[in-house]
Image (cartoon, rainbow, N blue to C red; front, side):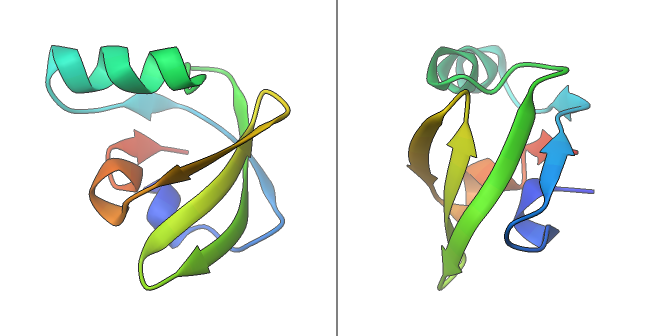
Length: 69
């Protein structure tokens, strides 16, 4: 299931990151790695604020759709 469909406040384990190599590398640099835990803090208009590796990161819906949990 893509990260964009996750309920707020529930910790989820990242199973896979889809997309082109440069997108995967960009997300990895932000802390989104396979096996890592990510929690959606808030979702407004499809954009998400997530907590990953004790850091809050804002990502758009298109990026969130590439992160499978």
